[in-house]
Image (cartoon, rainbow, N blue to C red; front, side, top):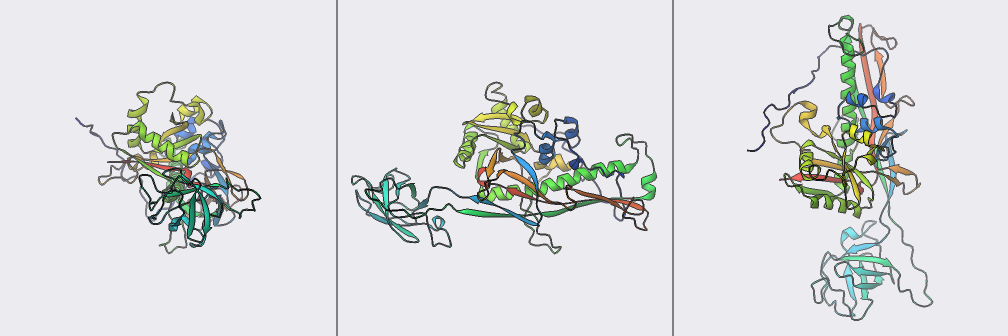
Length: 470
């Protein structure tokens, strides 16, 4: 019979907001993210479970260098920030409409699709005398007269035609035209026109993330029979710990799932998260839930190879997707293809943080269950109408990409912070009558944490979405 969840996840609806109550933390203003030592400390990571991918990067630090190559933190002095990305080096175009008379040795005039044009449809990458080939047949042509939207093409060999594969004398709409350079310049040739790769300016923005925990004087002074950690029996210790956890989840959710805020009235513009950027610019590979095959992983590797990925990637998986992966791989290939060491420099690090790895088509994928994709894991609620990230995987390439303008090597994924106080990504302070500073006439203690964070996604075309479908 089919598997059945007997005791579903519990904990819903989670924490409560205590209305007009006010709240607290300890006076040390301890903030986990600002004092993490780059070392393998599983017990520190365990405090939050496997809920924060960004926290994982911080904990593993410089171990082996591999983790740092996936994401890093940076700073910006402005609300908006940007970087540059360079387009392809080799020009190409597709045919807009069928063209007949593509007989042996005959020239044809083709019109390019709108997607083949740049600068508002006024430019393309073709120039006279360049050699190219028809995508479906490999037959080479020489480019003749070029306009903003058309080009005359002539077969290099008189016995060949520029017809599409399977056609007698017609080049079909959608046919790929791919340039390879001036391979037949001829005697006493003259100079070519300049071919410039497109450079794209990519703009991002920071969003404001805040959380407060107030506690009254009486509540703070009262001791409980519960040790909330470190010999602290006051509830404010638990309040601080839970505030830190919620705050880091909020930061990470904004960086992974954030959207532009254009329908609010409080002045926030939001930040565009990694997933929306990958969805708009990168490939998506799907598979059938319950029937994942090796061909699905090969398809994933193939589309990444097309985009220039040539080493390793992390795959953040919703837990249902890993069920399919475990069934496909990890009960069959216990040796050889499965590797652990490279993800964090040593096997101990990889296993401690829950990674499983597999090599396919020369690319190594490091799989990790990302609990933030799972509603039951975060909220204790079993959704009855489905979950947006069920059977979902986000594929993040390792390595660095040079900035097209400056040449600076940058990880593919970066958390960018505006710092209120230099050197402090998370601004933490106390206020109220019980605070050491920022005193008010109200006898309470208010812990406030706020940060300004956004994401920089370098070359989202190299990322991918791996989505299970029914």
